[in-house]
Structure formats: structure tokens, C-alpha cells
Figure 1 (tube, rainbow, N blue to C red):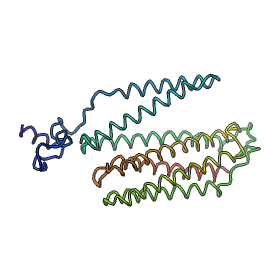
Figure 2: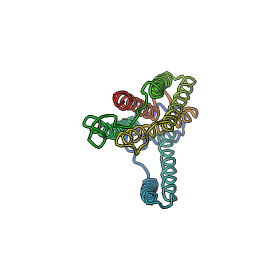
Figure 3: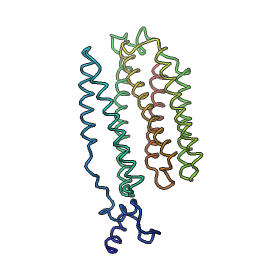
Amino acid sequence: MKQTLHHNYYSTNLNLTQIKEWPPTTKQKNLLLQPGPFHLVEPSPWPLTGAIGALTTAIGLAMWFHKDTMLGLYLGLLLIILTMIQWWRDVVREGTFLGFHTKRVVKGLRYGMMLFILSEVLFFFAFFWAFFHSSLAPTPEIGCCWPPIGIEPLNPFGVPLLNTAVLLASGVTVTWAHHALMQGDRRETLQALLLTILLGGYFTVLQAMEYFEAPFTIADSVYGSTFFVTTGFHGLHVIIGSTFLSVCLLRAMSRHFNPTHHFGFEAAAWYWHFVDVVWIGLFLCLYWWGS
């Protein structure tokens, strides 16, 4: 038994001498006895329920487009949200309490998050491409000019500039939270995280006010379409990022993070910085240059 445990130590970075009291805790047992540094997950219902939720959402969306009921859309979204909550609960449990997230597993999670953010970069690249395709070669249908005839663009130095300052400030506070967490300062971590979430909420409120007061709509030529679709998807990402950080705040309050094991927070911080960078591009291209 000892030989097997010592063999697994080289894969899991845990030594028998590190266990001060016997019997070992559940987390220590999992680290010692799992076959190698990788986590072989147990059978889970969440991929199936997530797929059913996505299918239900797509069908419900098609029915809504044809002036039918929105019940299918609501049910699909509800199932997706419940699946996400349960699935992430399992991941948190496996990484925080059961010790399955070894250094090798966390490395894989880092690569996965990087690839996810890369896919998001390509997602927004398509919208920027559509904007520049329409603005650099305006067609006769919109008056061969940009902004199109009849469109009154928003003042970039009003609410958009304020939103830029708000998001840049939130990038500073989330970095502050990360450094405080690395130093083991729980109080500052919670304060900085809460401030970041409040700034994200303030940005969302300002963006909603801008939409209500905009002198054009999504139906007003290609200008309105590219503007509202691009900024709208960015706003959705801000809401997702704020939710991500809110979960991190709750986990930090529950002492799930420590200076050496906090990838969940790192992933949220990466995502938030990505949202900041996209907004800077939106401000410079759509609001300032595009006006």
C-alpha cells in the first residue's frame, strides 16, 4: 500500500509525510489514490440536460419568431441555467473539497479558458468586420456616406466615454482583488471584488439608458444593426462577467480560494479584462471613428 501511495505522489504532488493525522481527510485520500495527475470524472447527467435545454431553447426561439408562444424559450433557458448551476457546483466541489484539481488538471483548465477567450475574440471580430465592411464602402442605398443619411450618431464623449472610464476602473479593481488574494489579504479581496461588481452593474445601467435614449433603432439601416448587435452582445458579456465575479465573491466569502489555488477567480479576471479590451475597441471604432 505504501509503495502504491508513494508512486502516486509523483503525479499528485502529495507526500505521506505531509499527512499529520490519520486517517487522512477525503481530499488527501483522493490525491493519494487517484491514478495519476488527471481527473477521471464520474458519469454526469449535466451534458445531456444541457443539450436538451439548448434544443428546447432553439425550438422555442423559432416558435417565438413565428409569433407563437415564448413558453418553449423560457423553459429551455431555465433548463440551461439550472444545468449550469448544478454542473459548476460539481466542478467547485471537485476542485475545492475533493482535491481532484491537481496542477496538471489546472493547467488543462487554463488552456481551456484561453481557447474559450480566443473563440470570443473571433466572435467579436466578425462584428467588427461587418462594421468596417459597411462603413469603409458605403452603398448607394445608405447615401454613399457614413453615418448613413438620416442617422444622428451618439456623442462619443458623453455616456460612452463615462462607460469607458467605468470599465477601465473595474479592470483596476479586479487586478487589485487578484493581488490581494495572492497576498492572502481576504478583506481587501472581498472589497475589491464587490467594487468591481458594482462598477459592472453601473456600466450595464448606463448602457440601458443609452439604448432607451438613442435617436435610432436596430432597424435603421446597417448602422443601427451593427451598432446594437455589437454593443448588445458586449453588454451581454458584461452581465455574464458580473455574474462570474459574483460567484467568485460568494466563494471568497466561503474561503474557497487561497494564494496558491484560485483558478476560478483567475478565469473570471481574464474574462473581465477581455470584456474591457473589447469595449475600448467599440468606443474607438463604433462611437468615435464611426460617428
